Image (cartoon, rainbow, N blue to C red; front, side, top):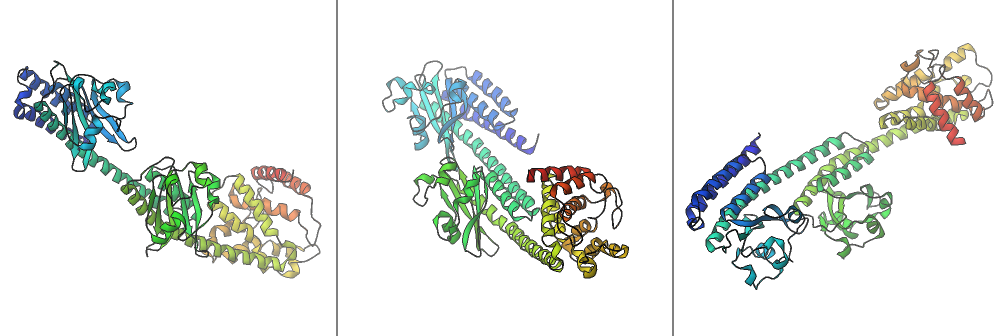
Length: 559
């Protein structure tokens, strides 16, 4: 049993003891004329029951039993306000059938309990048959009988619900003394409820902290901007218990808010277009840095209920700014529900905190995206430098890269592997820059010495790129893309799975494009003949599994 269980049990025991003292000392009239010792015995047994309770539900049900037993009531209920259902629902009861207590919602149509709840005043009706102030109760099974008491359950945070009992078993009406006892019991219930609310608030706060921790864990491990933004929207929905989320970032060039990620909506939702600063609710949030909540999008003049909102059935939203460490707005996060909903301040504050925490992750991912683009541009320049030297290889690197990436995607390789293969494909022949033009552009058959020089280009390429730290894995792929599956390749004579997987993929893509391209010493092969050549060389030059995958890709592409 943990500390929380012990605290609940102690609280229940103290409540029961106070209840016994309150009933037996302050309100002797409750027991007079009845078997007083029998009531005390019953309360003592219930005290024991509470001391064994393990949950809030069991304690509140025991209190319900204490009340109806002490007051000789036939029916009783503790009703608490339910924000989502906009009414009172039964938390504990006695004498009320399950099919009634599980489905009934007390709202403004109920003239007794709702009156007590709204007025926060106790009510005693000695004879329901002659009651003229309220009429609805006559058809309500909760008020079956001839006498009723209903009192509010108050805490320092406000009224939580009502406590009611109906119908004394001996047929006598309830008295003012009974009402005072009922009010005292409701006070004890309020103490328990207050502690439960505090406990739930603590659990929610822990859940919030856990969600924020999960955010930092998830987004900090991804430097891909698209994936980072997608993670942010998913977690925003989770911590706010909403149905959809969209994230807009400020475009530094256009100074507009572009939708960069959406979760919980269809693909067409991203077609809503950009927002100018100050335009609509999102533009207002970005301009002012102030959060906005709208319980009903259809009824708010600030919102044009577009077909995008209507198609998705989105009804309510809260939109918060994303601010960087300098306090500048770099974007907005909006979460939606598909029902009318008044977002509580606590949820808005949580989402605001969350949004600001995402700013660092977004900044890092953007920086990485910029660096990656610079790397890519550098690689493209190197590839173009090679192609400028040899007109026969113009476009070769791009075609090889395209074939290799198709194979990688078919094999469901990781994002990192695909990026490495993309770099390797573009630069796999970069070592030929160091080869003499007399050899590289020779129209006749190469001599053994010249061919030996050509065979150095994978190693030369790897050596040339080695100083670039971000291309270390790429260097290995380039170095071994002319190895053979049977071990007769170069430069190291690796065999089978000793050859890096990405090199094996690049090998077949390179060979296929070389065979189907014009060279100074021969005419190109047809795609059919080149594909058959790769099949014939499976298990000797090429990895047979990759040959099968490549065969399927080419056959599908050109069928």
